Image (cartoon, rainbow, N blue to C red):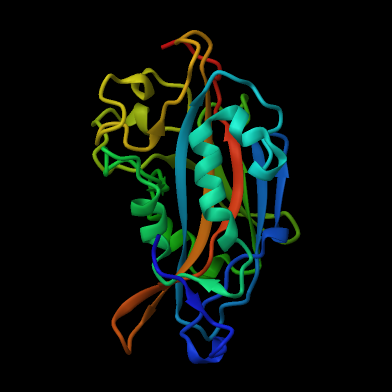
Length: 258
């Protein structure tokens, strides 16, 4: 686990701190939609943009709706999902566990050995740089994630706080890190590529298996976390906020048969 800083002894003012999105700003809706209200709490900080980490989990079970791990459903979906959530959850809304290497927590410390490349990945958007979309222009706006079965390619849309669209909807893409060249396989929908025999290495490094009853009727879930990232020009290093759980979404086209 990446080192955590105990800020109680020195105070936040002694550390180049950037603020997370409070967990209370997230409104899950069923198992396929979530609204994230982005506050304007990072003006004047080192903030550059928000980043979103995701991971896909295969499951034998349909849970409607998936709820956070302490309520028990995450272990029913996938044991690794439950373990990953329990590792991350102490950081959510914490004012004492502030981890400047949050990217390492998600992309290294949650890796499944002996496959060090398998981990949470960075979410991408089709046709536009996600860092520019999730810059300070997103302050005082809503991020709306839609994984509904009628929206076969899951999207993120941006609205003002009155609900008026200001950006998107943008199709969500899986990370290009080690992924095959088939563009259709990068969408967050039920896809045979997620059952590649090379799952667990670079090809499907964002997918966790863990199913126990065979390949028939497999459900796919994606868990998303959001964190703030900034750059400290004095130390020339990136800094991160604590994470916020967006939701665990049931992917469209679930269940599917490999």
